[in-house]
Length: 315
Image (cartoon, rainbow, N blue to C red; front, side, top):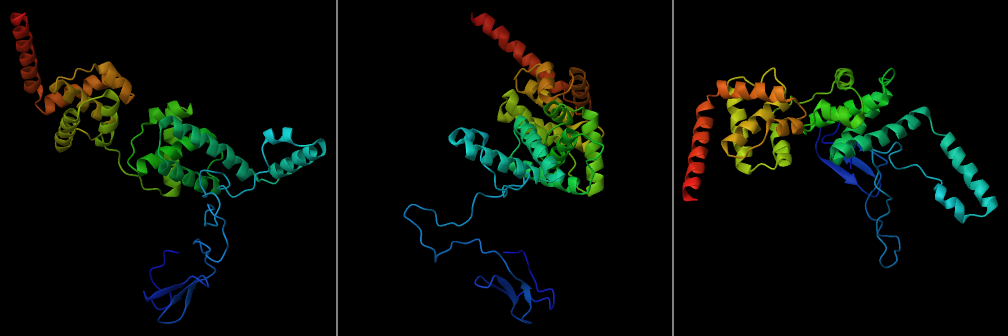
């Protein structure tokens, strides 16, 4: 049923849906607001065998497929061994003509959707992101914005835009690794697409990266909460502005891990965040100095030394 809230003629909200005629009718002025609507419900008049599903729809449509899953496929190549010689020639002829009738846009979509599935699987992205990226690519293709750009860079940019829209953090470096396209090229294409299509994306926040990084590093929930507290204090003193969110998040996790006696090297944290050790070191120093965390870390070190001395004396 369509998402119609009021009558376009009189503005009334008293609408009736007639499932028999497939129409939406205004009760006040009698206007047929929408007609020829498809009834997707169960056909109760048809006779079904026992165990047969009472639905009359086929496989669900998917925007991730170039034809949305509606095109008829003329068999598979493996079917050729089951046919007689005459049928084999007919099968190959039909399959060839089926592929010929497809337009250049359909051929482009077929390759692009296959590439999208590969990159999304590598990055372990959910279906909602894949659908949104496929929708963005369809808009880009219809407006002719793909010309002069590689298909891989456009697909990676669409996936990055979808991730930003749903606050699912993925860095440009991760996109570059998954798609085998340069980071600068993906960033350039991404900015071009959101400008031309007018897509509004959310500003990436360091907090979005905390749960994923801490999960990979196998840090405790307390460390994760402490890292969020460090980030909150950093935002209050405007320490996060003008800096990469992944770097700030990684440094906050590193500080929180030291405070909770969960030793992680700068190299381990940097590898997970996709940044260099120098960046971690610089952000770590900024957090320690601006938030006055040096005293806490020194106290923690002294407590650890005291515990080690006690253990030695007991032995």
